[in-house]
Amino acid sequence: MTPENTFTKSTGTYSNKGNPVYIIALTLVATLGGLLFGYDTAVVNGAEKSLVELFITKILNPANHDYTIKLISQYKLLMALCIYLVILVVSGQIIRLLGFKKGGLFSGGLVLIVTIWAVHFLGKSIPTEGSALQGTADIIKGFVIASALIGCIIGGALAGFISKSLGRRNGLIIAAVAFFISAIGAWKPESFNIFGTLPVFSFFFYRIIGGIGVGIASMISPMYIAEIAPAESRGKLVSFNQFAIIFGMQVIYFVNYFIAKQGNDIWLVNEGWRWMFLSGAIPAGLFLILLLFVPETPRYLVMKGKEDKALKVLNKISGTNSAPAILEEIKGTLHEKSAPWLSFGFLVIFIGILLSVFQQFVGINVVLYYAGNIFRNMGASTNSSLLQTILVGSVNLIFTVVAIVTVDKFGRKPLMIIGALGMAVSMISLGLAFYTHNEGMMALIFMLSYTAFFAMSWGPVTWVLLSEIFPNSVRGAMSIAVSAQWIANWLVSLTFPIMNDNHWLTSLFNHGFSYWIYGVMGILAALFVWKLVPETKGKTLEEIEKIWKK
Image (cartoon, rainbow, N blue to C red; front, side, top):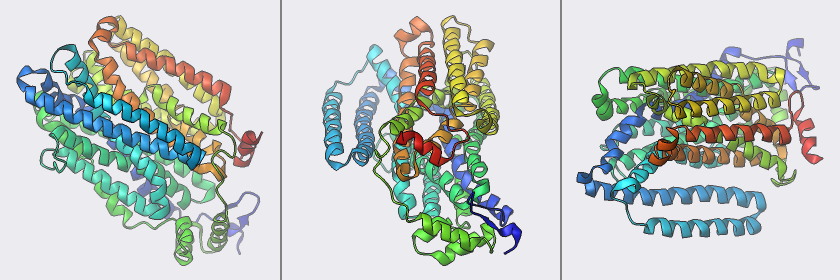
């Protein structure tokens, strides 16, 4: 064996890098899942105003009484169904955590509470005028705009099963198909309405399908990269996925802006927004085609007893001399056994959940989904608001790179605490700008500073911490944190229009109230990291595991 192919036992790495072009090509294909993650979740930003005007605000016109009754009735049924789906996901995680006996009892209590709520909710009379109708319209707006997140919760919950049963590559293929179907269906929800609902809820269902793709890709894309990458370059290659998510958001911001410039506001309401969603079919189709030419990961192939195929992939990745030893190492890791999720106590799971929840409760997806709405509240036109959204996306992209470069130099905790406090100051200041009717340049600066602080801290670093703090034997418990993150994302996206468009709150605070809430969450997030989250910089996974054993 030549020196350049020697296996280094002390580090578990191989100096032979195999075919770097092949490795990078596989990584780029997998990161298309991350790009579509960002693309699909941010596309609604440019279409939000048009969707509301076309499908929802018409219920405020007394002449549309029949439409109002039908829209609100279908919304109530779908809201109850979505709550049950969320409870189903939560119950599954609780049972996995506490066991069938204790977890089943707790989950049964949750189902009973939701059932009581559903009976009361469905039995309430439908408002047909006044502030009650306006409030309902605001709730439906948040419900429709955040519809993809229901799919994200479902996809995230299914991703573990799919990756284990069908494979990493096939899981990504399923995600690509979901992205493609969603793009086509959301383009013409009236024409592809197979659900028997109003067109707005046909759109809702297609967005859920896209969300399922996002949920699957959010877990399997980085998993595929990690399993296909050589050990010495795994961290850098996996970090490309986070960059791809932000890059996907930036791409769709540009696409939305250029589509909006093709016509006036009336055209945008009737037709323009449709092309924003349809544009997603191009990267989704490309992703699907390219996946047909990439291999399954060696680890999964070994799991399925296909060692010959695994060796062929490893030969290309690590070279023919190193591949057999790597194959033996993979076979050895398959004997590792999973432990009960509470083997290291509840604290590690609690910290994982709160990291995920605070990442959303600081309000980032309000910026990503409703940036155009926020800038219009500042007085910008539709085109100007979309152009300003591109600026937000550029700041997000640049400071994500800053985080990737500095996280191993400065540590996780300093970045998270500084980021949380910076976001808190920015959000409180943004709320004050609205409250004092100074919605011009200062408000834009606060929005950009908030985005910068998030991108350099809680955006990428949360995922770094989640991947590090869970010991190998209970790594599956990370799915609780991921599920909590999507649920928190949904709650924030659902409630922002309720707070931001409420007449009473607007008359008192002029759109500033919700930003103060997010600012307070930033302060709480900083305190949480300071008091409970351990610093993992420079520690091996085994050293981090010892923290929980104490």
